Length: 197
Image (cartoon, rainbow, N blue to C red):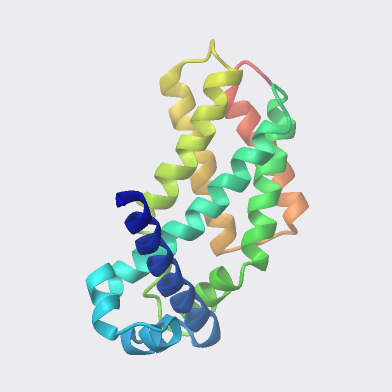
């Protein structure tokens, strides 16, 4: 009975987050209203507040889901390349940069920020703990299985640095994805394996 209730609640939360995502893409986060999200999800406004507390709570749930999707994809790209650090890094970074560039929610966040509204941008920058923690964890998980002799502190620094650089290139891209991914993969290799020159 508890599992059925939990599954129903998760479906409810997913439908609300879906509605918030669609509204953010359509008109930016500033235009998202809890009542509008409720109507789009087919629930009462009070239900949205009960589930997420505030608009900030809804923003956090929206960010969490996007991060979960990216992390799942990064894990798959890393695993496709086994022990080949350079190939794994390139695949994961290139996929992340390309997917972020094509992601309508990321586009909406960055476009809104350039227009003066930056309520969601901190989830990629100053309040990026969610992105940093989960993305770093997936890199460390991969490294733990493929670089067992590496120093854990050095791996933690390398993973954190690579994630921060990738996020920076998502927020302010300067070069084509392939070129950026190639340069960052080279740097990742040097950070994860300091003996390689």
